[in-house]
Length: 88
Image (cartoon, rainbow, N blue to C red; front, top):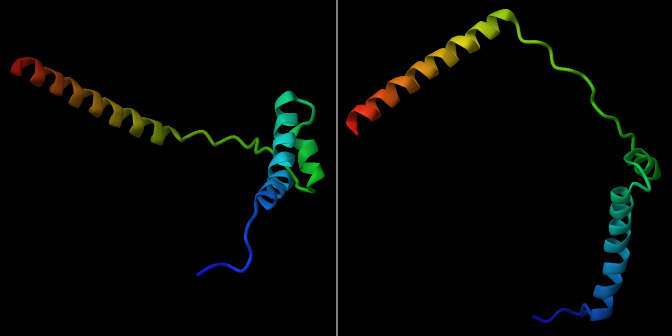
């Protein structure tokens, strides 16, 4: 079934000019350093914040558990290396 309206070459060009060019201009301005992210956010009334909260330090118990798991993993890998060396 044929559509009622045809999307012509001029319409494609027009939509390209409307959407792609302003986006590429803003991207290029950011790349060159002419504007910053905060200035760009202000243009679109968007509050741009950077999360500077640091993660909490893991507890001592958690660290000791991680160390024990790593030691077990190392031991398993050593055993596997010995097994592979004896088979070859």
